[in-house]
Length: 98
Image 1 (cartoon, helix red, strand yellow):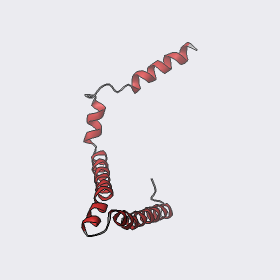
Image 2 (cartoon, helix red, strand yellow):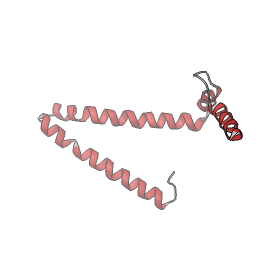
Image 3 (cartoon, helix red, strand yellow):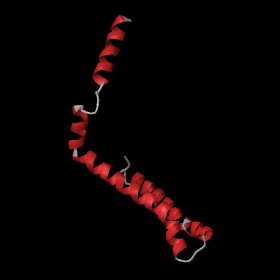
Image 4 (cartoon, helix red, strand yellow):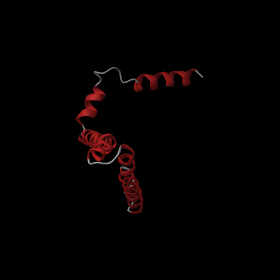
């Protein structure tokens, strides 16, 4: 029992990465893969938010009523859902899923 507690304390000490000035954060920030994936995520996130917030406004400015602008923005999300499913199936078939 004492040995288990000692090992647990060692794991807690090793897992503790410290505060904001930790070398682990700097190491992660230097990795090209981490930076690239962060930029890709932020790009997709911003595009998604812009689409969901501004599409109804743009359609309303084109002359649709507010209700019809909401309804006319539905096809965008349907196409996006279909493309997401197709991409998932394709990546599964080509063994490129991660």
